[in-house]
Length: 364
Image (cartoon, rainbow, N blue to C red):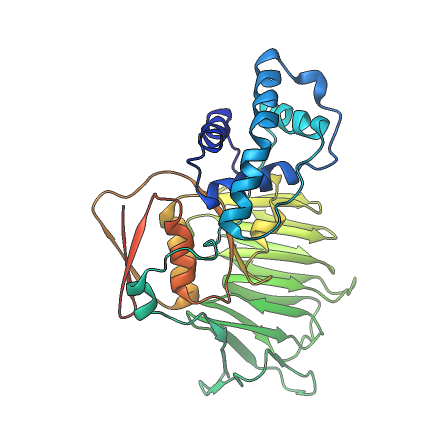
């Protein structure tokens, strides 16, 4: 779900930058914040005296932030947006429409946590199984990224493609539709779509690119809901341990039904929560991050973040003592070993980790 950054959080980051106590993570947060509004105008009429004062603060600390970013990251800092763009960005905070996205990354030269590195865990990989109707299980080739289920089988049988924790795979269905499975996910589908509809079921998370066929709707059954499309691109997150079922539309249109029916437009997301179906604008980058090879945390609690990490690295998670309730923001590649992901999260100074075998202990 989208998270908004409040004015207090921004001012806290600005104060740290001005006092030269901000971490590389926090400096990058400020930099990403302004660059995300490059060229956006038309909001200056909403700026109050307080926002104008804040804007002046930004200009005053500009050079200090740029210099510290050069020293910490050992690279040329990005140029700050024009003054009008900065003003527009602050105005958008007032309007409550700004989304905060920070690239989590351990700065080059930062001290590495030797214990995390010593007990490192590799990221997930292409790994899946195909189960036939008679129960026979075929392990899909880990040297390939996808499997194509041909429609040459004239007698229809049910198939199940599944990824374990730490696995991902692409499946091409008999009608040519493509499905990307996230870790710990599965789809069940017929080996031949020979009826008036193309119906499959999903558990976990998958991204769909459905082949157009106006005469035969494509239907996805998932936890508590049904999705009906003719040909489109969309993502479904239906992990049972997440609580909510989320459907995000990228292209075309889809009908999502669960007692009631809603029609999604591109860029919208439906959320099924406690048997209620609601629609709002999606954060497409966040929702599609897994397929694009990233983790994106856009105002998430550490417990939610660790669910994603546990699935991808096939680990168990244990919490020790008081755990931060702060929202965390960031972006980090899923291709990195777990030590680099955890170290990036540790750079927030809000959480620490310890690896014991395939268990990660989270503490404050």
